[in-house]
Amino acid sequence: MMKRALLLVDIQNDFCAGGALAVPEGDSTVDVANRLISFCKAHGDAIVATQDWHPANHGSFASVQRTEPFSQGRLDGLRQTWWPDHCVQNSEGAQLHPLLNTHDVDAVFQKGENPLIDSYSAFFDNGHRQKTLLDDWLYRNETKQLVVLGLATDYCVKFTVLDALTLGYEVIVITDGCRGVNLQPQDSLKAFQTMSAAGATLMTQADFIC
Ligand code: VGL
Ligand code: ZN
Image 1 (cartoon, rainbow, N blue to C red):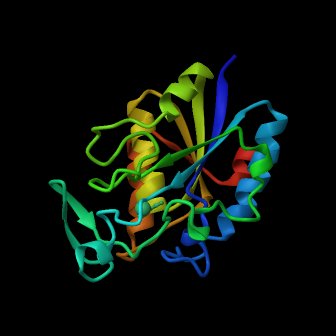
Image 2 (cartoon, rainbow, N blue to C red):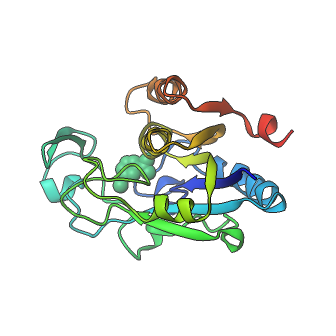
């Protein structure tokens, strides 16, 4: 039996309306996520969610670097965008969206705790130096296929999907369940193209549920 897991990336208050790093239309991922949670639950799939989970002194914060949000620099030798303070551990902004059906979520994985390096992917930090517990959990669950959606298309969704493909998972990305930051106008489109070129299958929720 091919086991499947639904992976909900960073559907957190800070990436939604009114949040510290609000992604345009970020809230619209919640309905898609809830529909897929019901569908996948009914099919016996695992359901996992991630949280961006930074200490208040995280090195990706423009405030910590005393610079302008959305400008660029280097962190631990890697290119880095400086973000507004967001998803600070245990804050309201770091909580999963209140309308997300977390009752049916089997496990939540946190990332971005190390203040010295950013962590867009749910599997590794941006330098691939440390691994989260997600891959081991999925391995124990005998997961072959991941169905991915969430926030943000051009950062955490993209890098999660690329790492998942490298780790050998079959990956389906639910395009209408994702929204991007789009610091540059085409970033989300490019991210979908990059994920597709790397081997991910792009589908809408309607395609997937049919
Ligand atoms: C994210 C920017 C900074 C994301 C997280 O979840 O896509 N983006 N931290
Ligand atoms: Zn972050």
